[in-house]
Length: 117
Image (cartoon, rainbow, N blue to C red; front, top):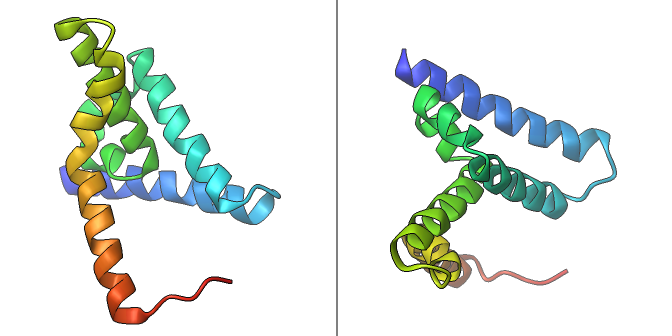
């Protein structure tokens, strides 16, 4: 049942993003920023954590989950070390994902020879 909930909620988040891209004039980059910001704001109010507790990876894998991780890391570090943690906490919590994106993006760029438009 956990896998089903993760699939349904993660898929629903992706469907909402696709509808925003298809039915509005928002470019996909703005939808991405909107989702990350929304995830961070909801975590700031403690609402996104409740969703994560219910559906797990279905809420943490899509883009709002990245905003959630940034905000959660910043909040935790502010409690530990103070004001500086607001700047370092989010990045340290998401460093693995960022490093993987850069690494695999580089590998794919080497394999497929990308061209700018």
